Image (cartoon, rainbow, N blue to C red; front, side, top):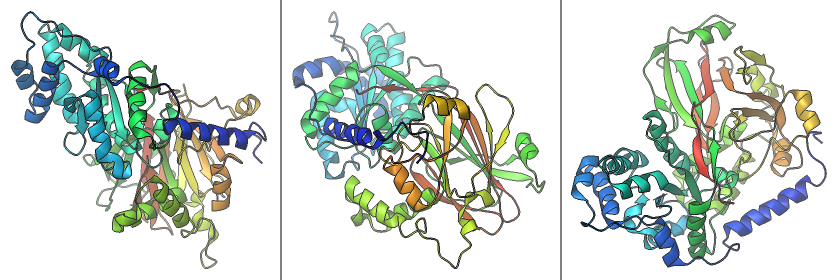
Length: 482
């Protein structure tokens, strides 16, 4: 038993919390919401809705701004909390399209964006810019609408991350205020949704629950969320098929700091680099291998994945076939441990020096975690006691503390106990920045994943692959659904 746990009541507390979370997600809490009252609170004036729509359709913010003006001498009512909703209609099983129609009924068609038709960056680049142009021209209604606007995302964690990444451009372009985001959970894990009080599942009483979610989006307090920049560097010419969240950058010389950390000295002259951002976790090892196999199976046989519950059942059964529970006697068990192929250096908070940290030989998966929730609401870091935190030099974990929790998972049995909150994972470190070196040798590939997107990473027998993780210098804004 891990002494960092609070005690024997941990499992029962987790069970009660999970039950409450499910009930809340199913729409069994709260009072009825009046449709007309909600509509008045969130719907923008018609001329602004049309300006938003036309700017995005024509991909020109000035067109929408010049074509749409309010009637003379009539000041339209200002919405208290104007909302726009992005929906991934492929999420939520068979309910995706019905939910889209319901949202359009509640807050107007022009304020609901189907992500198959309108991308988040197009909304930022054309729609929001149109409102800003109108505001600069003296339109008080447009100015107030832009300042008060909030966003809801109906989709899974990947969809939420996509929208957050597009809204981050507002920081870079100094276009304040940045819009806060709430969530209608339609994915499988929904860990971002759980972390900010929006529940972990799509409700069966969804028509009334949607109204309550939209109402909570107008009144919920706004919190902060760290995001983390990832730079994957591989020897130039290496064939890599990274996830959609990692984009290829130009070939570059090896970072001088990485050269200093390398102990072997056999480094390539040129590197191919991929970069992206994650909000929840980055991992390497068996968990990523299982996720990769599941995604490959789902893409090959999509009829098997009909909803979150089916996905979880397939995922669980698939993990038993990947050697996490039983390692073949014909293989060297040590090859399953990451200690042989991975080296990790970290920077602690308010520290400029890199520190090499040991990797336990039994660890088969290493996870760097930003949120409390992982793998559909589990908390593998646990809730360590204050005495334990002080002894290890740790602090209490939060989603906006500028730190990542690094922990290890051993064989499948250990991971199973972690996932049902009987024990916590193997605590390794807390870090403000991380550098991971994946070394060549007997293994020809490693498995990595980032916010649920896994990929197979070739390992060069002569040169190492590097992953550098550092905090993005600004935080995303999240609406609390509690």
